[in-house]
Amino acid sequence: MASQRRITVGSVPIGGGAPIAVQTMTKTETANLAATMEQIRAVAAAGADIVRVAVPREQDVEALKTIVAESPIPVIADIHFNHTLALKAIEAGADCVRLNPGNIGGPDKVAEVIALAKQRGTPLRVGVNSGSLPKHLRQLEYENPVEALVTAAIETVQLMEQLDFTNFKVSMKSTSVPNTIASNRLLAERIPYPLHLGITEAGTKWSGSLKSAVGLGTLLADGIGDTIRISLSTFHAEEEVKVAWEVLKALKLRERGPVLIACPTCGRLQFDMDTVVVEVERRLEAYEDPIEVSVLGCAVNGIGEARHADFGITGAKDMGMIYSKGEPLKKVPTEQLVDELFKEIDRYYAAGKTVQRDEGAAAEAREWLAENEDASALTPERIAALEAAAAENDASADAVLESMLEPAGEAAHATVLDESDSPVAGRRFSRG
Ligand code: SF4
Image (cartoon, rainbow, N blue to C red):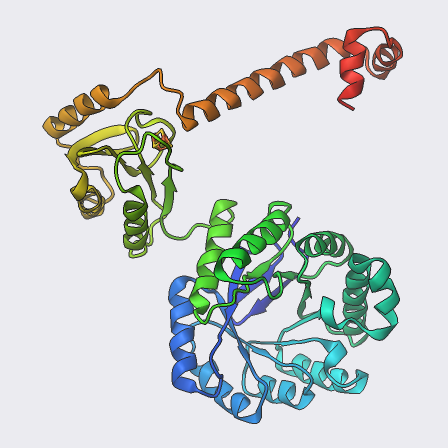
């Protein structure tokens, strides 16, 4: 359920079914051109589609002209309280201006900004924050914070429409994950405009990433949201971009770069997998293709769940193995696993994305795997597979049962439900 309407920020389409756009915000003093441009290049390299810069002072709006001209990605000017700066940001060529109409100085000033945005074709991001709802919604906020947020957002949308302006996206920010989810679900049903998603003041890299992944991931999985920003308390804005991409990749909404799969490890682990995984992840950053690379902590499980991976390693005490698409390629000493893995990946690309196999080395690796695999071991992966198979069987049994119970439509259904002494009826009733 993507938004019905689409806007375009610079060259980036937002909404109307366009790919979810990744954005972040610079953390430098905007007027410090060297530092700001360095951070913009870093976030662009990390995969940001759009960048936002704070414009709280005259010198920032002056710098904005150069930033817009030199930035490799579209630039949004972030304005609060001062409508004159919003006008100047539009004049400076900002690809979009973010403002909250509630804090820009009254309806006349909002109308002035909208008139110029219309004239220049500049889209706006308008929205509301849970911390600054209008006075008339304070009581509602106390009683029902979600409804208060949504009401404030809809009032903002209505104000834009009264000014005959539709070139905007909407954000509704809250520090509460449940409120963000509930309010955006409601808003998505009520307005056709693109939605900007974020959890405001989410926290540190660790807790903020998790809160954002839960909140934004839930909405994105429902098809709600057109652009996302992960807010983290770190000076390194590119970290926000990396987290945003992991959320989108996990939901298979967009592809960018390799996907790393790693087992959680358990008591069967016999080598320093922590270090290996970190090193593999670091080296994969140099690749742009969405190849899947897997790291397994032991060979007990065979290649198992990682059978589909383009490349992978499985380690043991002294020796490990490199494989591709479920087939062993070679066995190597544990300390050379990472280097040899990347040698194989590079050979694959050098050969036009064809896996290079040496049959002698592959046979040796197969033999090693057969010696180390234990098909009877109940590994975490096998337990998960058994549980999944059991759930599938249960679902199939239920489907058969359902089809047996419903041959004559609703009448038959009602009859069974009335037979309260029937074990079948009890089972059906309890499942709702
Ligand atoms: S059994 Fe599974 S989780 Fe444990 S080390 Fe081996 S691959 Fe990793």
